Length: 361
Length: 149
Image (tube, rainbow over all chains, first blue to last red; front, top):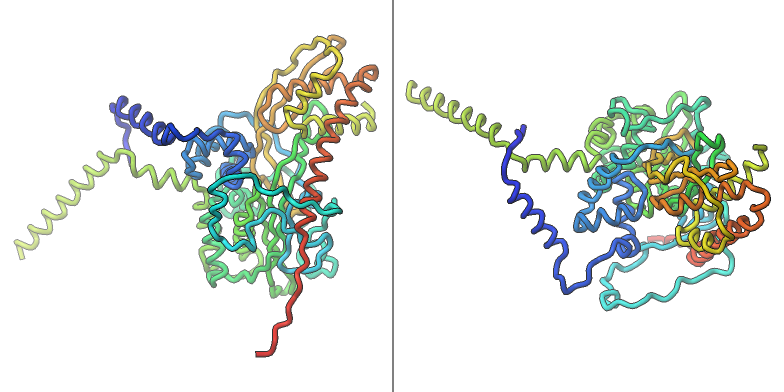
């Protein structure tokens, strides 16, 4: 444990001034604006909003600027800011079936209604550094099709479920508010609602590695990317003073439906099961990893062996949050002088005792 | 308020919430003189927890929060207007609350309604452009039959 220390105020102030100077960089180079970050580093903003668990592009962009581009530090800043705001309530559940589609693909169904819409993507690029981009200049305008994409695109699960080949999720009859880990401690076993909340704000790198482990054999998921869709959804909220729900804005989300082979049990016939991922903004890698981990965490519920890290709810959920993880790892930098002093004394005593025993033998 | 009025009010409140702050400011500046009003609740920023559905269609879960600014005003005649708007723009929330109150006055509704329609058209144009841009990236994959050996 660390203990409180006093002193060093001037040094700490000077260290922060030095950091501010380092953050600004060469004063001859124009300073970044928050608007530039919000517009031109959009995917970094999306990640900070997702893991910071607050949808606000300007706040996330400011956090990125303040953290000098350290995204985990930016997530921490956003989480800290949210604690200063009152909670007005919970939205109506979003309807991703009614999304204004900007991208929608399926790796399982070639000819799905509405078609495969690539949208803005780095897929199929050659990953060659673009030196023209270094020189700057405006890109050509995006192409426009004669006809728009369908206003309503069915989810892949709706297509397969007509034959009963895929499990369906149904809203509960008497649905209370879902569990909220910002209001209650994480307890195990956790319901799927709490698990999804923890995964949604969990670290992308951690979930990505866990998802990868499940594909490599540490957990058997046999997944297909049933559908990935990205676009804007309207948020509805029911203010008490009105008594009816109203739209309070739109947000961009990425949704991933993984579909997984399932051999069935004595109660459930063989069918496809599903893992679900949802992230703020355009965050496809995160949504895919989340869906794979969500499905892996359902092993117990589906009667599969729970034998691998990705299937272990406590291991996954207790370590997915990068603010908690970063805090606990980095607190080792704080003064542990008293602790270390006592350990030093202990080691000295043990050594002295060992030397005495040796001499006596 | 009867159900049909709810539908109308839902629409204009939604349009005001989904408009860009500069668009609401532009619409506001083109309106006839705005009558005096008091605040029942000054613009206040807080959080709304965004809920998703498990699998897209199942039970609700908490996906993450968003910033929201709310405001309530009362016109001199007693009509109350509310606004709940994504983001942290106090000016937009205040204007939207006043416009919500004015829209409830049948005498003022035609003039204010034209401003609401203009905002709705801007949103529709944006959505339409996005739908045409996305459609230009629609792809047909051909499945290649693998040759023997």
